[in-house]
Length: 428
Image (cartoon, rainbow, N blue to C red):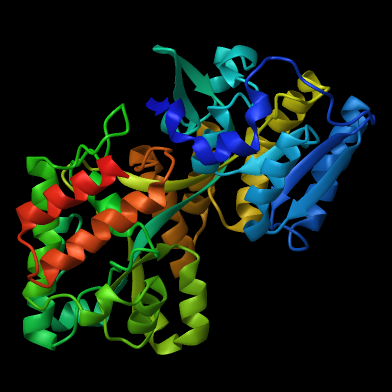
């Protein structure tokens, strides 16, 4: 579990300083459960109307569903928790929810969810919403969210480019990717792939370092990447760039540019969600015709990244038992499987994942998008949240990316770039 140092949460604690004690104020007095989600209306109105009506009839407890835009959720939930007017159940991602967990904002689900119920979820996914909260040198485990829906990246690849480069299959790991990149460039003149080093964009490079065996920070939040593994990961990306096996735009352009290059037929591989094959079919039908999906590229650890959405229960709810009943209902196997099909995401209970895969395998014919979904689901056994929940994650990414760029441009040696990045992080 990730150990959180309370001193790192200054910005959050200023907003919710009143959460330190155990006393609570009821957030609403109505006989209903208030449920907040992130940007799911109006597309999933019928789904939630159905499950909410079912729950309301079974439990005699109506649901008030409020959908919040992605960009507004963090500020709204911070304000609501500070004012003790939070909903009974809220949909968040583990990284942000963990910040509030350190300030006693959520119910500890380890205490109220039975062990047999916990075991219904994928173990590594359950772990994604668990941390250690440390105070006065006393650290205790704390689970702040129920896993809900998941997404994992797959490798979408251009079969024609691979054939032109005499490659029989896409690479499985970064070592094979480097070999493939050189072969593709030599035989076709094209780049194998695009990955961004723009500090404010995708964290894929940061995740690749974890896949290569790098520990980013230690239990005290200090830099741990100034290590043989960290220097090897820096050197990997620096050499690819200096050998001109990466487009020069990787220093300035974001992930959107990777999409543009792939759809233009200029790169062989694209790391994206399975559903993006649908967009490719619309935007670049000739590329879609030669596209297929393979598992996410990984490093020596074999780890694959997964994005998790969960449901948290604010500690100030005046109906914790009913809030928990509802959260467990939304995330049970049947409802998760139904939502996964509706939203083209992945479920997080073991049984739902197995049923999801089984149904795909039983189809007589399977489309490219369904094959990609199957690949995505099958890799869940190796999937986990690669970067632990931490404050200032964007700062860590910026520090590492900027020093990587300096090494790629020859302004620093790899060793100096790693050392400078570690020093900068520890001093921030």
